[in-house]
Length: 91
Image (cartoon, rainbow, N blue to C red):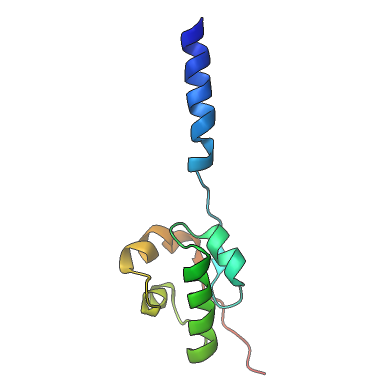
C-alpha cells in the first residue's frame, strides 16, 4: 500500500515543475506578466524586454524578441505560440 502513496507524493511534488504559459503581448505587458507567462524568462529578462521596447519601440514580430540581450532564438522558439505582438497605436 505504501508504493501508491509514494507515487502520489512524487507526482504531487512535481506539479510546480509543470508550468503552463499563456499568451502575452510583448508590446503591452509589464515585466511581471511577461516573466510569469513565458517559459525561460525570469524577471530580469522580462525587465530587459520592457526596457528594449521603451528604447527602440514596439516589436514587429515575435522573432524580434531575440534582439534583446540574453534572449536567444531557442527561448523565442519555445514560447512562439504564446507570444503576441499587437500593433501599438501612436499617441
